[in-house]
Amino acid sequence: MINVIETLLDYIKNSSTDDSPPPPHIGEAMGCWLYFTALAEEVPALETCLNTTTNSELLKLIQDSKNLAESQIDTLKKLMVKEGILLPEIPATKPKSDPNSIPLGAKATDS
Image (cartoon, rainbow, N blue to C red):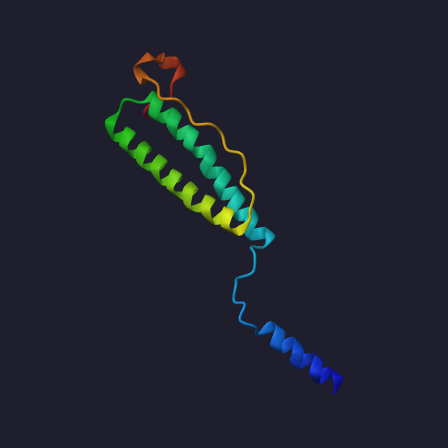
């Protein structure tokens, strides 16, 4: 009879009105961390590309990619903070520069 009462009490505890989702498990946290880090590393690389090309079509494509990456970073950052996942350190942004002032041997080619 005691087992029946304990089982009933456990059922009542588990079926309470607290419907909050469980915190993310380590695999989910790691996935968020890896994706966030990859995006954060990509933005400075795209900024370097923006600073070294003069091709208008390529500039638009790179800028669109940068905007998408920054949007994903913002969305993921909000989720990670809400879920209590610590944010990794991210590299600093690159300053704007004139692509024509960079020597040809030092900059990436448009191809």
